Length: 112
Length: 115
Image 1 (tube, chains in turn cyan, blue):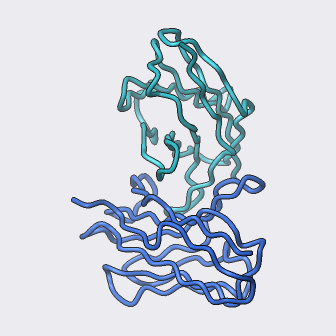
Image 2: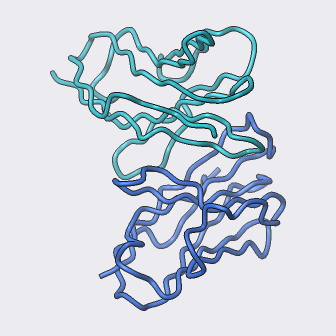
Image 3: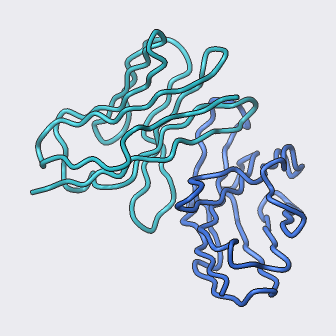
């Protein structure tokens, strides 16, 4: 069965520092991979997605993610974090027709 | 576009009562999803519709839960009778094309508390 692991429950990063959020997936075929962000009290918003082509994917708000098949990973990165990036981040894998399986999320805290 | 609209935003009810959550997807979107988010279980897909037809309801926890989509612009998720363990945030999402790589657009959620 498809699954997604986000090993970090919380991460604290200083404003202006770089960020990397980890995501590992389990899927038999070529996966469709997504990163969503959830701000407090709001629904999820898509940051970026990968389903083929260039393994380095650019998203909104300055985020990028790299698909590494050999490591079954799809880590999210940002070179310089802003206070407004504080939120919860979810990695997801496409699990068949239209279904998404979400990871448990990583809560990002940004310190001044 | 107004985005996905959910109502109510907050619902507090007593155990045994019927609860109805409502969702208006983005106009023109073909697919609609209902999710439940809890601290213990994370974000779970309950059911999804394609062109108003339920495609997969394997995530619906039990017979107390039912969902309908009578037309392309409206869906309901009903819990009858409600129980305290149903307390969660329920999200509705819609997607335009109904494909596996499609972006899902989430509503703001309904926070349900069952006392």
